[in-house]
Length: 316
Image (cartoon, rainbow, N blue to C red):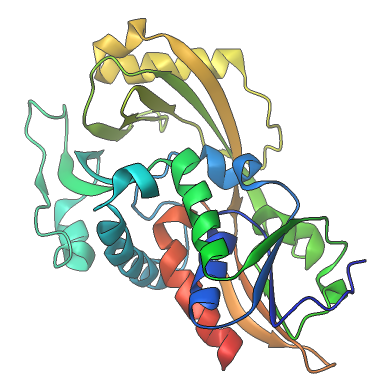
């Protein structure tokens, strides 16, 4: 039953935020259980494009600090990309302001520069950033947690109050809408297309004059194409017309994408909120509840920074 005592800490949620938080806690000496409704391979995190860069996340200042701390970790993990799924890859952030980017990230990313006309049509910046292959990274996080003595259980939680552990970390993403409950958490639907990689080694993120996004991220033999950002849309079924439009927008950037063989389709619901909720909430019965959710489109980008802050709140 949900109220069963379950160790020092229970982390509710098995996506990238929950697993990373659990790893930090376990490696600091806590006995940690992760309770997750879905296996890690079926979480929203598993379908993320997962380029490191803050996107649709507030507050901006905090998000940048969390992102920079996470960058340090990802740079180290990129030393073993086959195992961790993290690589440092060059590409172009279209329509990005170089001076603004340098103001907050230039010290950590000294290679930031303006993209050349050959690299991108229009204004943009060239950067070498972490690109995370989530089908590799999530199982690696899971194993790192298990190696640190943590455990993972697939189970449905009826409410956070029913989790009978001294410390509970709420990393439920969109699930917080019902579990907290917090009606301010809303979905932002993202659809991706996975194609055979025609030999592309760099990534591009572009926003057209009509506001439509186009991006592609290379992962060895495949290319992840995106995307969409549909506020308030709950459907997780791929839309063939949307998929066709995504391929078309990406092919406008790199024509060889047009003939690439389609390998699959992905849809995920980003857990958007006006501001990330990362705070400690003492309970009347003496238990501690720490919230760590609402990361929008930047869960991977801020995962380690938020995990360390959540672990600190749990211990304070």
